Length: 75
Image (tube, helix red, strand yellow):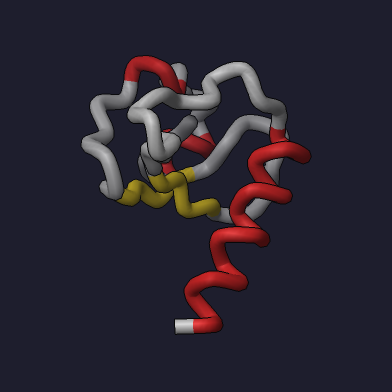
């Protein structure tokens, strides 16, 4: 991820895993191969029993988020 447009233009990227984002912190930047700026947000989700579903893929995460959003709309 390039943290500034100058870094992007000069090809200076850092690994996302090296960014020190706190839970719910957001960071703007550019991901290599994507031409527009993105907003990266670190979110942490836990189940009722305190466990996390770290093995789920993007599709599963999307389904879970959609279910949770329906609860938000209800309230």
